[in-house]
Amino acid sequence: MDRKKLALLVGALVIAIGTALAARSMFAGAAAPVAAAAPMMQPQKGPKVLVAQRALPVGTIITADAMSFQQWPKEMVDNAYFLQGDVEMDKLLGTVVRHPIMAGEPVTRGALVSPGDRGFLAAALAPGMRAVTIPVSDKTAVAGFIFPGDRVDLVLTQTVEGGGDGGALRASETFLANLRVLATDQSTASEVVDGKTVVREFSTVTLEVTPKIAEKVAVAQTIGTISLSLRSIADNAGDLERAIVSGTVDLPAGASRAEEEKIIRTAMNRPQDRTGSYVTGADVSRYQRSSLPPPQSSSSPAPSGAPAAPGNPAATVPLGPSVKISRGNAVETVTVKK
Image (cartoon, rainbow, N blue to C red; front, top):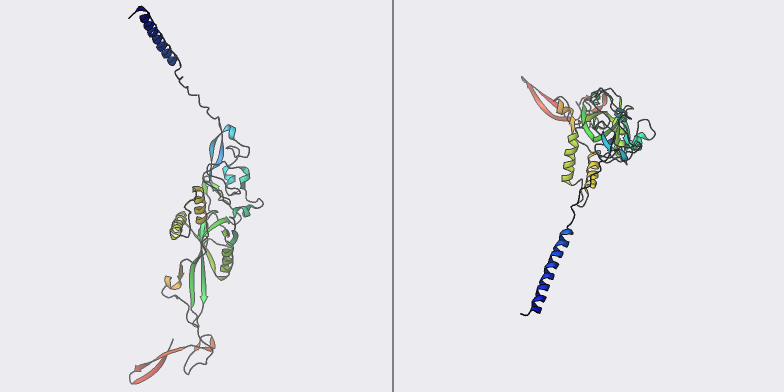
């Protein structure tokens, strides 16, 4: 190999080595920089505001477990919020929700209406519902252990006169169920002293009902005595499960969680306009009737030997079969009344 070719080969090799070193240096210097985490901005802690503990639909009567105070970012506090230290929780008990409030949402002053304010009772009623008031006593109102927001059944007790022998049918039946108590007397809130709910006497109870149920309550007051039967909270859950299984409450397949909760809440709060269980006097005592006696006819004259009905000489008592009674040698035929 001549010197010229050897010089070219050495030159090419030097250039290649130089190029490789330059490229390595360039790539090493262009390495991606390590990202440094920016310090997270902590929101400034503000005062405690009143928030809903659960979803509060329109017409909800505020109780002690419905709301509580919670820390809120200072920059998000609104003038309409209730701040801890500026409002007494006891004064909000018994107020009614005017606008729906979601769980965890701050309660605003315009969302509540207080007793005595114009439209208070109308705000407490759900759409399409009515308010009726019935007189009660300690015996018919669970000795005062019923408070606004509770659910009750109505029991009608009556005495049905019938029969010429003076016998009467005494009966009691549950004719309405799951009615919401709006107020006792003129109070829509429970009185709390030293953290304990005060049980007091009241003479009237205002209930939330449908227009048809309002008519039934009005008629029932003329028939007999109405008593309140306090419902357990668990009863509503059991009735709801049975309604879903039977198909009375239909949950659409594509419904969202919020829609399902609204359907379930409506079903649980629905008054039940149906005749429930009943008891007659015979279920309590063997000396009472289980049904009314058959009607007696007074249109036909009494047969020979037929006794007149007590208190009404013109009325006759239907006669039954006759029996023969032997007393020694004497035989007597006696007709038995039906």
